[in-house]
Length: 286
Image 1 (cartoon, one colour):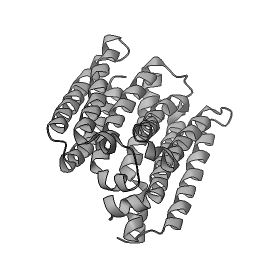
Image 2 (tube, one colour):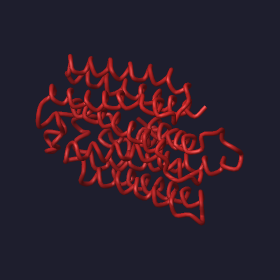
Image 3 (cartoon, one colour):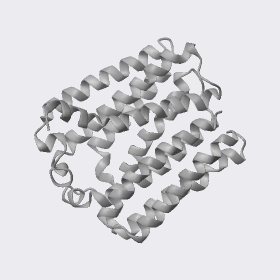
Image 4 (cartoon, helix red, strand yellow):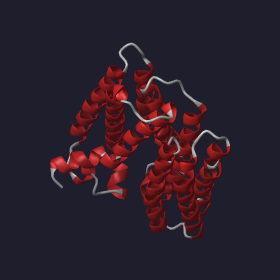
């Protein structure tokens, strides 16, 4: 792996793209109408904020996970030697400065976009430095970082936090918590050595799979409420039904087979359902 490829891998561009899209979805949910030209620059800056701060949090997490990744993910940039730990932190700092600068430019006379960006950054730093070892609490911190971009999108377009945006933030939080618990099954060997108290490490893979399924299915159950409450259009239903089927099938598969290999498969598959879920959030505004 070359250095350029190492920095790209540190960045996790797919994760950054998903968080950038989450900002756009949050903005769409707040406005409930097509985007106009006057908000285009704000949306672009909001996307940049989400993309760069997500990349920074990924890089910082890799910096602190160096010893764990030597066991769980030896091909990652730092343990493989493609990127030095010091270079990783400089890279993260550049991303942080870029992201926070973009958040200030969104609304120079309003602190809300900047404050939300700072809260997201602080949450990711808290997870990387302290929260990771706490197990489920750490999972909640990661999921908060996944939910915040929807809220951020609302402030990017100058709207207050609505019930609709808050509702979908909760759905994202629940689904991602299930994924983080599943990830704990995959990363068990390295987590155990570092004393990370994941559900898997404390209670075993069977109970971890049940807890993960609980969070996935909680999101499934709550996902139909926006339509029943009349806060989204009927176009919300087709993609959300497919998403719910995906989460339900994945939950069943994980509980039946909670091996490391199956958990890795489910962890990756859930990203597809989460992306489809974001599409349903967007179509619900049409």
